[in-house]
Length: 480
Image (tube, rainbow, N blue to C red; front, side):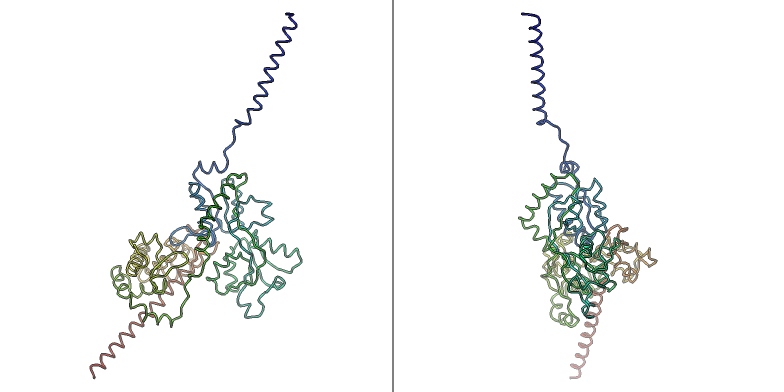
């Protein structure tokens, strides 16, 4: 064969072989392309789900028996679904929560955030989990004064404050652009709950809150009232870290199962159903129940009060405050019985049946006795019992926080009359943000202890009157 032809053939086969190899490699490479692990993969590998939670009653707070809140419980279930630990970073305002969401280490931000059009342009939202409506909330005093607003036009001239960088501020700004005369102030200092408190105490005329937040707070602030809805229905959703498509898809799947299983309905009922709330009966009703209900349980109050070194009148009064001496009582949070014990607390106390009057009273007395032992030694006399009762209601951690706060305020942290001045401040961001256990409804334990001591005084007075009547009756019998 001619040398030139041989060379041409060799070159042809060489080029053909190279071309085949290159084409094969090109076709094969995408199939075996190494992909970076997704956000979801990283979460599962690290076994940690990092979340930002707004420190508020509708989202996350430390209760008497640990962390609570609708969104906290929801995220806890999702973390359980993933088989990972839920690591919480708290925020005190919506603005702060949004700022924290920029941290690349944060996977989910939960702050009762409405999925508005403006926010959808900025943030990567996950699935919607709750439907709310923005509502104008005003002081009831305005009703009596005849200036209670009925629509947006009536807001002109009113003192209105809403949270900065919230859906409420977006609504106000949009209404102002539409020509409505609304002189609103935006604040990053106060949470929505704090603004509702200001409305209740007539410090401002109105604020705006989501319907679920108003529902949770109206029983604590009876002087606030719903004026009107200022938005259409909105969806609450979590903000997810950018580039988390797999995480988002997994959350949609989990939430669908959570809804279909009935867990969502039960969770909403747990936090937002008020059908089982107790009424606050007047003094006359209490006197009646001293005669109709107390005699059934009096021997148990006396027996276990003596066993655990607690005044029987205090134990009986506490039970009335908790359950109105109804052995089958059940609150919206699931606590039950005469002493309203949680399932977990009852188990720790050896109470097998929370609805059994004697077991409940024994467990409640033992639990109160434990609280007394946890009260710092520096607290003396009757105050030890008051501190313990407050801890029974809100948790000892918050009592310790209130003590630290009282000390900073120049008050005596070991005296109840001073502590009760500090406790309500635990619901204000400027105070609780620097405390170990964060937000708490500090006014509740104050009212709780005051109510118990009011009932205690009535019980003791009633007992003295009955004793005097019996003595007087005996003298009459002798005369006869």
